Image (tube, rainbow, N blue to C red; front, side):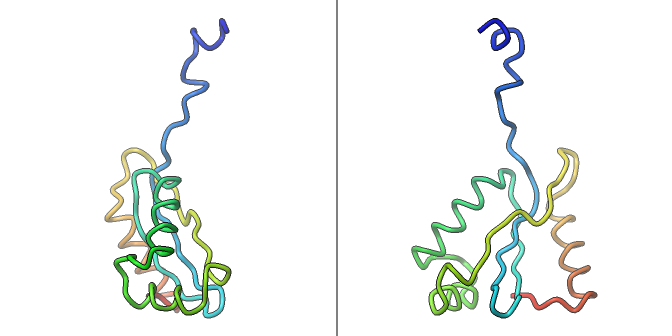
Amino acid sequence: MELHTRHPHLYASKAQRGLLCIRNLQTNRMHLAKGEDLASLIKTTRFTLDMGTYPHPVLQAEYEALGLELFSIEVYQRADDHEDLDSLLEASLERLKQEGASLY
């Protein structure tokens, strides 16, 4: 118990910021989203897709047609505290476009 009182930061997990990728495993089409807490964003994304309320209509329709098994929802890129998530998202999308990735 002594360790816990002297070093509470060892037990506190800090939220990871960054980008999330929703990937259609059948078509390899991707959608990126940004968030301050990636673990929470993954749960929220999965919930809204399951409930049919995800704000991207094409992605939502494909998810409903194909089902969870054909999608992955995972961390795409972690960000440092000082990084601007909007800029990181924009740069990542631009890089994916240049690489010829299929995006929603």
